[in-house]
Structures are given as C-alpha cells and as structure tokens.
Amino acid sequence: MGLFLSGGDPAKLNAHEIVGSAVAATGIFVVVASIVAWRVARWRVKAVGWCVLLMIAEIVQLSLGYDRHLGIHVPLGVLLAIGASFLDLWVYKPHGPTSKRSENTQFVRNVRGVVGLS
Image 1 (cartoon, rainbow, N blue to C red):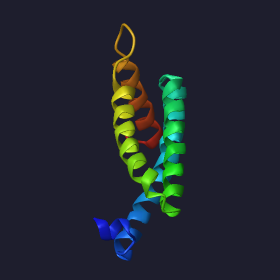
Image 2: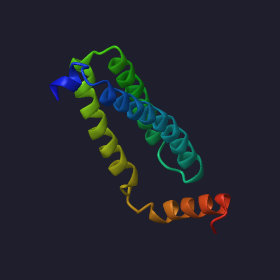
Image 3: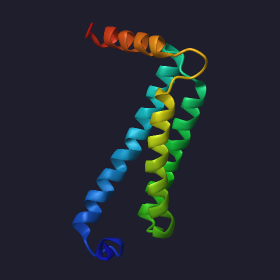
C-alpha cells in the first residue's frame, strides 16, 4: 500500500487513473439519467441536485489525484463511495404518504418502449 501511495508502482497508478476517469465519466451519465428520471418519472428534483453535487465532487477528486494531494484525495474517495451508496438508497426509497413504486414502474415501461424492449 505504501508503494502505491508513494507512486512507486506505475502499473497500479495507471489502472487507478483509468478507473478514476471512468468514475468521472459515469458521473456525467448519472446526471443525465437523473434529469430524464425527473422529467419522465417525476422523480424529485433534489435527486438531480445531489447527482450534480456528486459529479462535481468526482471531478474535484480526479483533480486532487492528478495533483497528488493524497491527504484530501484518499478521504474524499471514501466519502464519495459512501455518498453514492446513500444517494442510491435515497433515490429508490418510497417518499411521501404513498409509494412511488407505480410511477417508477411506469418509468421503466417508458424506457423499455423507447429502447424497443416492450
């Protein structure tokens, strides 16, 4: 672990860089998907805001990693993993007095219709 953090293992750092870039690219996809879910399935607009915040944090994380600010990069990576997990749980949790399950099911049907999986 110490060799990795000190930059002494270029192969592992290269793999870490590829994964980090993929996470940042996925963040963009998540923001777009949250906007679609908000507009089509009437998900809460807060979900879009949290996804944008998560994407910004991922970009900051990527920048800190390239600049080798490990004192912030490592804890922020842990917080991002925890935050993404809580965001996933929050988005799919029923909100309000009635369950949004039927609306989410309708969203899945709409997406399947667009993709041609009906």
